[in-house]
Each structure stands twice: as C-alpha cells, then as structure tokens.
Picture (tube, rainbow, N blue to C red):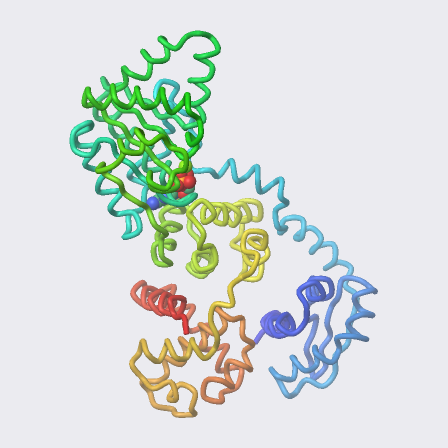
Length: 460
Ligand code: ADP
Ligand code: MG
C-alpha cells in the first residue's frame, strides 16, 4: 500500500466519524509524508492545522491508522509549505460551483437551447426522440402518436393532464414539432394560457377582436398549455369557447394540457367543461426509479457525456418529485464536471445537491442490503453474515460489501464485521474488486443495477 492509499483509507474512516465541517477544515490538504519503522509523518498545510490535529484529533488519527496496520506506533505532524501552495492551486480548480455559476451553467447546459420558432411558437428542443416513454406516460404518448398520424380526426380535442414538471409541455410541443415537420403547409400554433389570455385582453382593449378571431380560428393545430389558468377568466373563456367550436367543427386539431382533469378545474364554464367530456383525456403520472435512471441516461447521452452509475442512482433515488428537478440536479453535477474537469466524488455529489435534496433519504440500512442481496442470489442472509467460507458466497458477499460502502458510506471495519467477521482489508479488497468487475463487465453492471432497484423499492 502506498502512503497515499494508506492516507486515503484513514481519511475515509475519519470522514465518517467527525462532522463534515471539521473534516473539511482540518483534514483537507493533509498527507502522509513518510512511513518508516512505525513512525508516520503527516504533512499539514499550516501551523494552525498542526496544532489542532495534535491536540484534538491525534487519537482518532492513531486509531484509524492502527486499524490498518498494527505496526504504526507514532504519529507526528510537519508543516509543508510547498504542498500548501500546490493545493491552493488545486483548490482553485476543484471547487464546488457557486450559485451564480450554477445558474449560468444551468443555462449553458440546457439541452440544445435553440430559439423558439417565431411562427409556431414551438421550441425545437422538444421532440419525441428525446421523450422517454414508460408506463407513467405511455397512454399519453400513444395518443400523441395517433394525433400526429391524423390530426383533427382521431383524438380531437386531445387533453393531457398531470402534475408539475412531468412532461406535459414537452409532449405538447413534440406533437406540434412533429406535425410541423411532416406537414409544412399546416398552420400550427402553440400558446400558453397566459399568452392566450393576454391576446384576448389586448384585443379587447384595442378593439381588435375580429383580428384575433381571424387569427385563432384559421389554425390547423391549436395547442394551448396549462388551461387551468383560464379558470375564472370569463372573457377569455368565452373567446376560447368560440374558437374551440369553430376549430372543432372544421376538423382542426385542438390539444390542451392542464395540471388536473377538466372536471376538477374550478370556475371553468359549464359549457366548456361539458365540451371536454368524452374526449381523449390522458394523464401522465410519475416516473418510477428505473425510469428516472433511464431519463438521466438519455439526457447525458444527448450531451455526449458520461457519469458513473452511482451518481445517476443517487440523483434518481433522491429526486423523486418530477423530471424538471431531475434535470436540475443533473445540470448541477454537469456544471461541476465542466468547472473542475473531473467527476465529483460521492461526498461532493451530496454537497452539490444539498440545496435540491434537502433530506437525503435514509433510504436503506445494512440489514436491507444484506437481505436484498441474499434474495437476489437466492441464498440465506445468514450465510452472508456468518463466517462461512463457501465458494458460492464469495461474490454475493463482495457485492453486499460494495453496496454497504457506496450506498451507506459504511466504514471498512464496519463492513468487514457485518459480513462474516472479516477485517477491513477484506472489505477494501471486495469494494475494489467489484468496482473493477463492474467497469469491465456490462452484464455485471446491469446486475448491480437490478439489485439497487430492489433496494430502493424495498419499503419495510
Ligand atoms: P410540465 O409541462 O408537465 O410541467 P415539462 O414538459 O416542462 O413539464 O417537463 C419538464 C422537463 O422535463 C423538461 O425539460 C422536459 O424536457 C423534461 N421531460 C419531461 N418528460 C420527459 C420525458 N418523458 N423524457 C425526457 N425528458 C422529459
Ligand atoms: Mg408545462
């Protein structure tokens, strides 16, 4: 083991036993300078840190060192000014982006920020090619396909509803974009309800209602997003009602979205509400963990980037609210990658996403991991925790060790103790082995993902 490896393990142990703030303050930029005859010299960046480590942390440092090697007897600390200068340079590079930087990068990384088409008001970034379909949205997607195939005929009007950030606007615009591509002669307009309302109000104010009527009633495909905002706006609803009827009678396609089904929109005029009865209403639900992972993978593939599965799993299992937040979390990680030119370590990932994930879920326990791994490999959990040296238990035990480390940040001695009363070196070896295997073997990686999915769907 090199000095660096030794120190990384020690730091790993210490990080788990003290507060994050203390860890960062006192252990950043420390290293093992030499290790000879049981004497370890640790280099520290300044006198203050030296004093602090000697007085306050020497015990836990000693303990962590002895966990690794019984031969270590004495620890001393020296100030390494050169190292300090180097790490100051490094530090400059390896920083977590500030809020401002993140928001700038959020924009830069926004998927193909292309301007909106002036004629149709459609944003070409929304397409069906980058719309992930799974059980939560397959009905809406299938209906969308029919609408694209024969606009104005099969599902008219087509009404999509669902919660915030789960893809209503994306699907609506993707339909518009696709029809526009296939039928360049068709007049397609996408408007938000706010824009529609503004148009009505300003037409009334200018006395140009006829012009407005002409405009909206000559459309082949009219897409209005978020019609729940029409609630209570009588004049707008009236205009919408007439527009709706004209288009409908002329077999023009109408596509609408709302955050709830039409029946549940308060103060939607009765005649409008009854208009929606019996039409094609498709809801979009919430993507499950597996789908959230697929969505993240699709997004990074679109950007020609790669991130380790651990990070994607962390995001997907912690950001459950909606797809917009999922993208937000991913953008922050990508911002870090861009700024630092390196993939963040797990503790950095947690830090970067702290604002988004206010309460990282206590998602699982070591017992669950053992249980799920045992179930997966069809063995008795006891076999994993006992000392048994049966050959067929080697791999499941290593997988369990790896998951304990990655999912729970368990310390190596803890992992060793829980899985067969092994020592920490066995745990370290297991984690390294699995990491390597995973990198070299796609089907094994898939296997690990399946276990993880079971882990997070596990709720007792
Ligand atoms: P809503 O209109 O329901 O509030 P959006 O359509 O604005 O949600 O979606 C939020 C974000 O999530 C958008 O950036 C969108 O591209 C993305 N998104 C939504 N659904 C999907 C999906 N099925 N596949 C890929 N990305 C999606
Ligand atoms: Mg929307």
